Amino acid sequence: MSKFLNDKYLSLERYVPGEQPQDKKYIKLNTNESPFPPSPKVIEGLNKEEKEKLCLYCDPECKGLKKALADLYGVKAENVFLSNGSDDILNFAFMVWGKDGAIFPDITYGFYTVFCDLHGVKYTQYPLKDDFSINADDYIGKKEFAVIANPNAPTGMTMEMSDIEKIVASNPDRVVLIDEAYVDFGGESALPLTEKYDNILVCQTFSKSRSLAGARLGFAIGNKALIEDLDLIKYSTNPYNVNRLTQKAGEYAVEENEYYVNNCKKIVENREYTQRELERLGFRVLDSKANFIFVKSDKISGGDLYTALKDRGVLVRHFTRERIKDYNRVTIGSREQMEKFIGCVTDILKGE
Ligand SMILES: *Cc1c(COP(=O)(O)O)cnc(C)c1O
Image 1 (tube, rainbow, N blue to C red):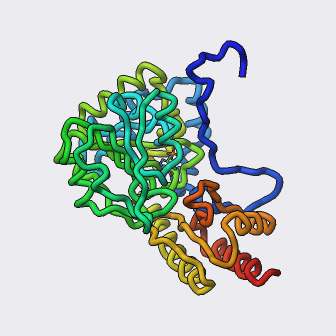
Image 2: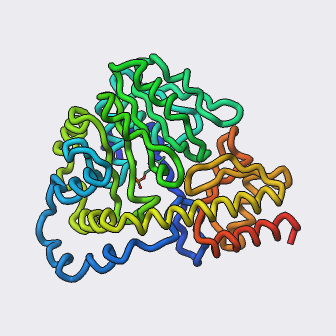
């Protein structure tokens, strides 16, 4: 760091994204990307004509994409916020709603603590239960901004919608953010609650189920006043936060929603296949509704399995935190990728 760095950032610990090594071609099962390319219109639509328009600023209001999403989810455009990946929304959310602190589980998306530290938000992390489920009671009636990933990461486990509603209803004076990055793989969305309560924001992304991780596109749906809070920060930092090509890609992706719904079905089938095969090999596999599974074996440590897989050209995500160090998070890819993964795991367990 330079000697000019503002003191308040000296102890900031950055978020560490999943590795993207370039040394060889890996089967990438470590960052929950989609194995499928974007839909045909997305690929054809970002043509020469569209690229020539890059000399012009994009629409800061993202009107076309906002309307497309509002229609898809049966809400009004004023209830939709768009951003450069949903991480951006989380960043803004901790900034605007964290004045009384924040609460979230001890095992969840690792970025939440970083945003808290960045914005000086005090936080409490409630331990997941022994079975890795979230204890809804921890969040009921509290004054702090509550953030719940549903399905949770890296467990893939879901929370009952009735519990989410209880949390939201228990204190109308604080915001509850439901991070639904993985909801399209079999979870239930809290979107209907956004019409009933003005203190819930639902956050989703085009990165996982819509094959646009590299385009950076996230969105949030909630009460108009909450969207205005997010807009306040957006227009005070970067009004053009969703670039021209990404807005177009998003519009085409919504038009071709069926393609993505179908891909999600394939991922769910591949998840079930992978779970069955791993259980046959003696693994414990948590009950996942996401495009990844969280798995452990009594025959090999989490770290050793991660390394042995990497040596064979398969990347998975291993976390070193004490409570989950025996596990690996495995993204669900194509059937072919998962068959190769299972083949490698079988060899590793045999000591080959
Ligand atoms: C991937 C992920 C996000 C962020 O995704 P973006 O690529 O920034 O849209 C947010 N929350 C969780 C839990 C995630 O896993």
